[in-house]
Image (cartoon, rainbow, N blue to C red; front, side, top):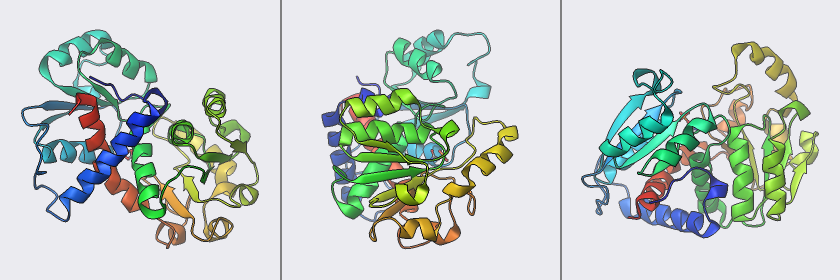
Length: 308
Ligand code: CP
């Protein structure tokens, strides 16, 4: 049994094997209908709990569909409807759920909730996003990059904007997949220093560059995310917009990267804030391939968790 808690907590070999498996499963499905089962039904008879304490479109639909394609069943649970945070400990919740289901995916606010759940569950736990990291997203992103441009090892990835949870998982991936990482954004929104230090300790060339035009020179991949995350208060919105306006990904910034650079965004995007329509819908953008690959990458993650 394996938990999938973070990119840096999973071995580089396992991460690579998960992506190889994801690609194989994607190809094997061909163009069959979305609801059609896979040839192989490794999750037959398995029940997977999908717990959401925050809103979700991609994570919810891709996990639910992925389980069904592999022959399993899901229970989609909202944190508000459960006893989470209403007196029962997370540890007890983990013990109880482990008696009912074969695997748990959770999207929650505090990383401590995820970690406590994993510590006390006797079934695999998957991180479907916390305030600190979003590893499933980055598995899909690496898969997407390599489908379009080949191995990501040695490439230059530039993150423009808020050094948030998705950015953190990209830093973890830089260490595990061997690419260089440049962050460009205002200093108050730098990625957590501990994540930068971890990546550097793994030999990653991590650069912090305040000037976005300088940062993207030679970039193979340019990534951004929404300026106001789900866990940020609305009162931060105006301040964030003022801080981040200069880091919008637009045609001018995209043109300063390599001619064949890709653009990624985990979505949902706030068009004309962090990214313009022209870039989102332009020739560099692979944002909808990323969204699709959530499905394929997570199916391989789930099989790895269950040893199937
Ligand atoms: N990118 C992502 O995790 O999307 P959702 O919040 O819609 O799940």
